[in-house]
Length: 273
Image 1 (tube, rainbow, N blue to C red):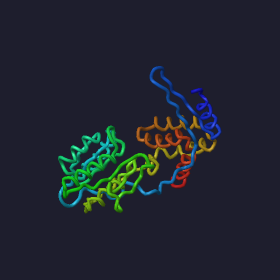
Image 2: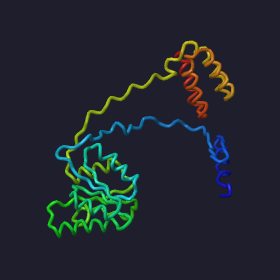
Image 3: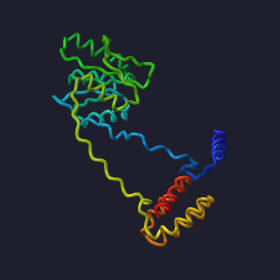
Image 4: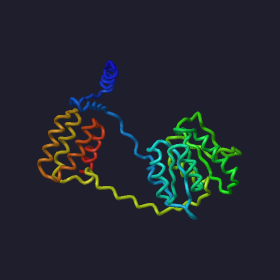
């Protein structure tokens, strides 16, 4: 609260050769922008979207009971499980969860441990006790959910209360693996959509009228004359509307203080021009 953090941030930014900018409007708020010249990040990591996702499961529809007092977490679970054709029931506290279980006999219950009126463990005990008292043949599989790693208990292996344990924030792949294992599901997979063809890169085939500016742009970059580069790019844009993407892409490098990629792009154009 004394402003010391902002002072340290400014000093560290300047030490790293960058700058810190501020935009402030009375009654609305303040935005600080830090610009740094950083090395290029690698782009050879596998895209998570390439992983297969189930579109459903074989056999009759299964009923899953969700118990959580956090609306955001319930919404997350619904968004993941509803498209897979599960029948979902949602309880916001222990009493409503027990009532839903009694009325609908779910196949699986995902129970948060921290509920407003009782713990998830209390709910499990009452579910198990009710099953033993009425000798119900249908006893749901139970996975406990908690954001507290100290409460972790793997479940199964003879544990009478629960069959599995999930830690928040829940990983979607781990959630689906847990659901599939507990319910012995055969997942159905659809054909993954073809990846969209990338748009042509503005520097792969630049307009012919831009090529005679490459030398000047390169020399301005070599001496680090950022203002001169910006003025030259405005000049190129003004020559012809088709030059806009070419100039905008180079301007993006300058705006991010990425002079290395700016120079590399221009060197490539000089070699193939």
